[in-house]
Image (cartoon, rainbow, N blue to C red; front, side):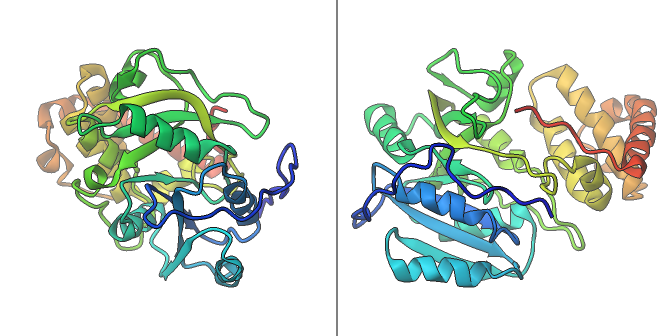
Length: 320
């Protein structure tokens, strides 16, 4: 397993223990599966926050590497408010389901177990929301950066946007999503498929895009890394291990995406995933059967190409 060096790039002195607010505005939640070697980096960034208006929720998704003991040690230190929840392994989307059931704050943001917060992230998020937030918006979308500070993808060019519109206008790269808790919990939970551990998190985001825009913030709130054993870099393997989950998200994208071109791309992927999971009813179950029928030949070709990449053991390049 690849291990990340546990240090902050600038190695500043940790700030004194923050005084937590009685009812914090923001929950930072972290799904963790055997990431005891990376979590200290995130914990240290929480100690450096310039605002204490947050709560940290750790969803331990079946770890066997000492994650429980590590987090319970931090809870005993009482330097930041922490809730720890252990569950049987369900995959990232299952951990998100659990987090959304437990979160009670106005806003929430997911910070992955191998990433860390910018020192002023909580302050920036709360300040932005207090100044500009309202029921018109689902929350805030902000910037991610690499560990050396390079912004991932492109910045925002409008004061508010949906994720769909941002990428349709040529926007690129992963972004950090800070959602109103009442909005994200009003959408259906991610489905769990027996024997599978992956459903794209974009399912909920697509549904929210149909109802609300997000305030944009051209500030880095999270520094991210893509580990060689992480799900993003092993997407070819995910296609074959979780075909029903992929077929589900492709079917939903065909149903909701406003772009005809994108709907056809989703149909091609839907055909490919349906072949992998040996579903003979894929045309009947498609929300757009004619489009799906037109995508059968390219879907078969995609299936063959993905299988070739999987056999070769290739990893998917992730933009930084």
